Image 1 (tube, rainbow, N blue to C red):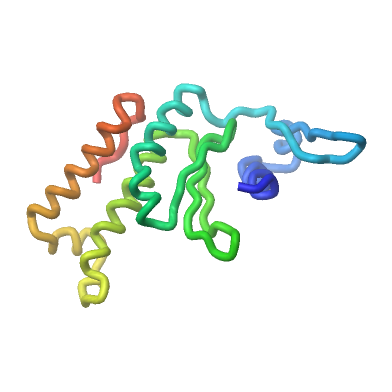
Image 2 (image 1 turned 180 degrees about the horizontal axis):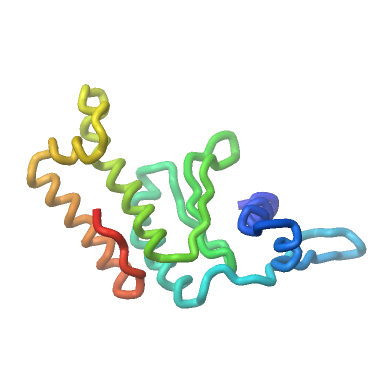
Length: 163
């Protein structure tokens, strides 16, 4: 993530220019503004550890899909998705491990439910309808995968929603 992208994300986190000024100090060298340093912390150390576990638990997904989660210092963690011409179409910031887990699980689940039906008429159905059409053993496999991801995260993540 470039300094410009981080600064743009920072601006989006702050409600106003006044809020932005409270959050950041600019680093000056020889009278030139070269960057900024965060004053405000958006993620606790405890949540940073939990979010890192979630990020690592879903690492296999980063290889099969156009998505990655990166640690962004005091901002928390950023999900970057769909790289197009040197920019990501989605950049979402997380400071809550349960929210990060839920979103990554939903992306993983939707991908694995949709992939078997690509090129068929079933692709027009919603994900729940497609899931019900899957063989029972495949449904159970998908449910077990969620439990697997949760076990990789340990007890530190906030309670994630159930699918």
